[in-house]
Length: 304
Image 1 (cartoon, rainbow, N blue to C red):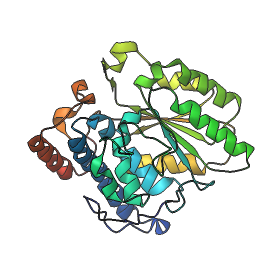
Image 2: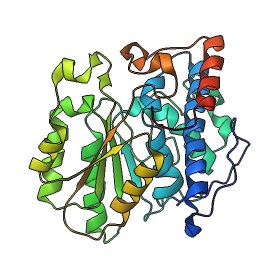
Image 3: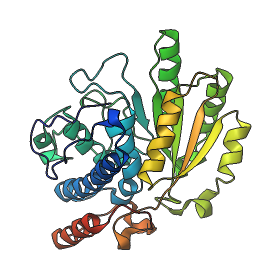
Image 4: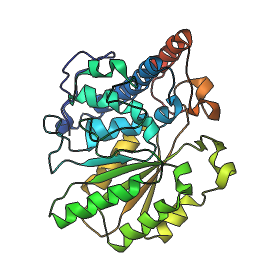
């Protein structure tokens, strides 16, 4: 697990991190819910700097990001390329605006580095760049490539005799990409059990409802038929997400890759964005951004 050492005071300061070794579940839950709110409010702040961005794609994944980065993954902020670190690749890279504040919060770089987010000359763009940003393992762009890259990392880790886990997040619209299924076949064939794929099943993509654009169901049955273990979870129940990810991370080798289908709400936390495809990409006026932050902070983290 990473240590939350803050080089500079974040916009939304983190509470004292609970002692995860003591398994104080109430404190862990409070901390993870707080960090999910932090991810959402920082996303609003950064998009206000950039003047456009993908609010709702971050909001559907905030609890997953929080559980992964603050609890589940073994990270080394002081040595970002540590060979034994767990890896994370993201196909829906337009949600990277929600990842950057986490990395700053964990001590990979100062929070002030984000003050020119998406401006000319900034290392931090709409999609993450692994050559410029500490803590980023995969440079995304066109969707469909994250799983292949993650599987390559898992295979390389096994060949090197290392035991790190590779987590990959892909959007449900991304399942329309043929490369995803080629990668799924490869992982099962090579018995890569250190790859965990998380599908953000929020139901929407840029062009509208995923199942209306090009249906992807039955998702679970398809992945099982490709030789994967399939688990399903409420993607906004942060403790259920945490428990499932820990189970995947700590599972004894069995030669079976794992797919988690996380049922989420596009735009979760800001009511007028929820399940509204027009907010896949957009911009809040400063007054609307203030209202959105207040709404996020008034959300107690329970699923709706």
